[in-house]
Length: 215
Ligand SMILES: C[S@@+](CC[C@H](N)C(=O)[O-])C[C@H]1O[C@@H](n2cnc3c(N)ncnc32)[C@H](O)[C@@H]1O
Image (cartoon, rainbow, N blue to C red):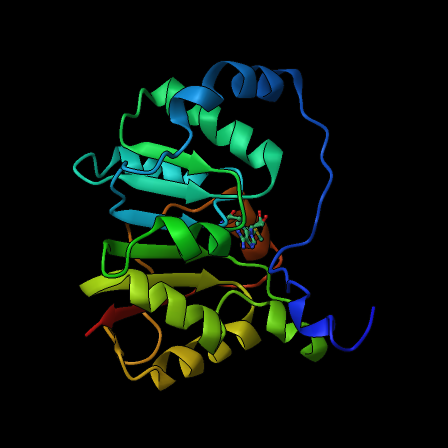
């Protein structure tokens, strides 16, 4: 690669992972993907980036039937699991996009359209040379904030204390976002505890929530 090409390299925010699909997941993809895949024209209220296995998405959407949830996740077993959960719970207000969230945001989510963006336990990318891969960095936050309506909420959670502090600093520095709380948010009852969070709690890492409102 020449130095001229280098700026064109895409900085990924996720680890490319291979995962074997279980029979149940394979079946969910085959039967349900067409029905629950996001299509342009389906107006989104709440966007979740990196929905993982989809446990939080399915529970939050079930508790909030008046709003439409779009879960974006690149990990195929996670997509399949959420398809299964949506179908099992009979949820009509959830769609999934199995793409890089920032590709989707670039062309398919209008400016000023979202009531909320959820980013729960994003990969912390702890090494300094990987920080550019984090989801919560100024350039990516600028995109998320642009897609929020005035009064819309950006809600992030992490079990990585260093990333939590960086989130607070990055979001506070954004002139168009206002912290809903003074510092970290109290743990919101409406955010379910996922297996991911349970594992972190067992390992002695508590969660930090941050909630910012677009001006
Ligand atoms: C550490 S997991 C957390 C999953 C889930 N939110 C939870 O709490 O259990 C982070 C997830 O974000 C996904 N992810 C990271 N960057 C993404 C992007 N740009 N677009 C879509 N998904 C992304 C990864 O594939 C991964 O599944």
